[in-house]
Length: 144
Image 1: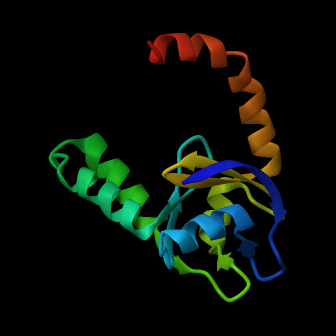
Image 2: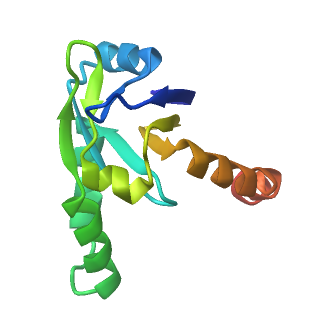
């Protein structure tokens, strides 16, 4: 559903233009709303509404008596915001999420199948550098 890597910038109001390929995919699948939240590794996760509901169901079934589950759910869901695209295909990223991800202006949008991620350009560069060397060894472990 969401694939590829795109370089963009936020406008002065903190809005992001969703890549045209992602907008086309969303239109084909009748996606009107997204949910943005704190992601892992210092990025933001963006889910289409149906995928968000699916993830939400998974987290609801985890035992809230476990401290790590409570901690994760609090940070994940308290950071979530619903975002509808405007006529230009933009979504607004709240200041607290930009702060979390270290986003100033230049960003990288990364498609990760069922979601896309928003990264500060510098942070993505650092992550990519550290991860690319282990790509093959990780693949050997995961893919049989």
